[in-house]
Length: 118
Image (cartoon, rainbow, N blue to C red; front, side, top):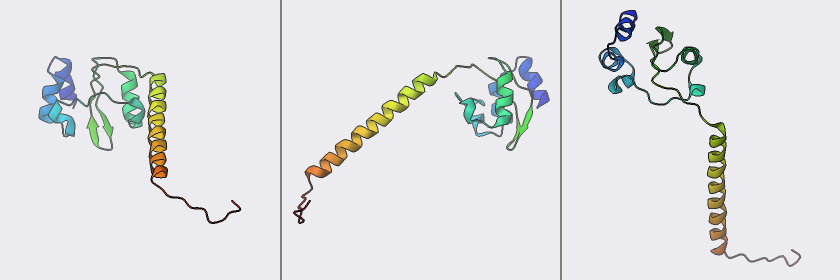
């Protein structure tokens, strides 16, 4: 991995080396995993990701799945307010759907009360 890291630092494409040498399923995409939520990654990944800037390569490090080298293409911050609003909108839509479903069930139901004290 150190030899591969040296090649990448010397200008060889991360993607081409990942396609040839990686055993991770992402090798098909040149090692690209897409956007990742740092909070959902194992601690060992977070430790290395937090130290990297865009277009930087991590030193080789070991995980339970084997040795890794990470190259950060870009970073972006997630707007927590946007996530909260999205969550509320989804919950509101679910509640509306459920309420409509219950109302439709009631329309088709026949209810007869035999106890006149109710």
